[in-house]
Amino acid sequence: MTQFDYIIVGAGAAGLLLADAMGSDAFFSNKSILILEKEPKNQNDRTWCFWEKGEGQFDFLIHQSWDQIHIAGKDLELQTSIAPYTYKMVRGIDFYQHFVPKIKAYPNITWNQEAVQYINEENGRVIVTTEHSNYIGDYVFSSLYDKEEVTQQKKYPLLQQHFLGWTIKTNRSVFKSDTATFMDFSIPQNGNTRFMYVLPFSETKALVEYTLFSEHLLEKEAYEEAIKNYIEEQFPDTTYTIQEKEFGTIPMTCYPFHQKNTNRIFHIGIAGGWAKSSTGFTFLNTSKQIIKLVEHLKMEKPLSKFHQKSRFGFYDMLLLDILYKNNHLGASIFTSLFKQRKASLILKFLANETNLWEELQIVMAPKPMPFIKALVNRIF
Image (cartoon, rainbow, N blue to C red; front, side):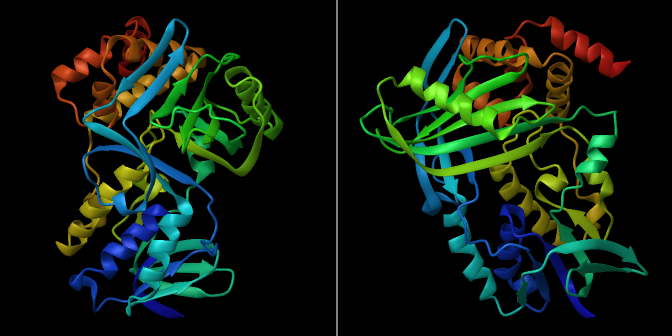
C-alpha cells in the first residue's frame, strides 16, 4: 500500500481548491498529497453562482455577472440593483480547465482517477480503499456525502434543493442581459417552494432553471414540462434550441456534519456542511473555509477543533423547520422579504455578514408567527 501525508477524496470545488492551496504553499512542499477522483473532470457538469463586493479571486474565471436581480411572485414584480454586490457565475468546465492541469503539475501531488469505496481509520492512520487499490494517509479530506446517515436521523429536518436547467438559444431578443432572475415564484407552487431561476448570457441566450425546496425529487419530465411552460408563458411566439442541460440536488439541513470529523478524517464541501443550509449556496463559503483550513493545518491544530458555531446556523434551522412542516410557505416568506427589505441587505444576511440590528430587520420582515412557533418548538 502506498502511503501519503494527505489524501484528498473528490475533485469538486472543495477538493480542487484545497489541493491548489496546499500545492502552492511552501509549507506543504515536502508533503506528499494524493487526489482520488472517479471522473475525468472534462465536462461542463455544473455552474456555481455567488455574490460578492468588488473584485474577487475568481474574477478571471467568471463566465457572466449581473448587477441587478429580478424577483417575482404574488403581488410582487421587482427589478433592483444589488449594489455593492455583484452576482457572479463560474462554469464547471472553466474551473476544471484552470485548476486540474495546474494541480497535476505540482511535483508533490499525485492524481489518480479511481472511485473510492471505503475510508477507515485504524492504528493512527487512515486506509482509503478504491476499486483498484488501497492507500494509507496520515490525514484524509473527504467530499463523499453520506446521504443515508443524514436521511435516517430525525433531529434535523432535511429538504433538498433540486433543479433542472436548460441553456437555451432563442430566435429573437427576449432576455434582459443585465438582470438575473433570482426567484420567480409566479409559477404553480403545488404545495411546495418552487421558483424559476434565469441567468441571461445575452438577449438571446440564457440558463433557465426550475428549482424546488422540498423533501422529494420529481420525475425528470416534470422539471422539463415546467421549464417548457414557463418559456411559453414568459416569451410567447419564441422558438428556441436547447444547448446544454444540467441537473443537481443539494441537501438543505443543519445536520452537524462536523461531528463526523476526527483528527485524521475531515469532511469538506457539502459533506462537511459547507453549503448554506437555507439556500444551498456553497461555492464562496467553500473558498473561505479552505483558506481557514489551510491556516489551521499550518498551525498544527487538531482537525476536530476546526468547526466554529455561528448564530446564522440557528436562523437557517428555524427557516428549515418552517419549510419542512409547511413547505408551501416558502414563496410568501421570500417575497415578503424582498418586498420590505433592500435586496443588498438580504444578500448580506444570506452571506452571514450582517450585524444583530440588521438581522432583526430581516427576521421582522415576514409574518412572525411561523418563526415564533419554530423557535418555541426548537427550544422545547
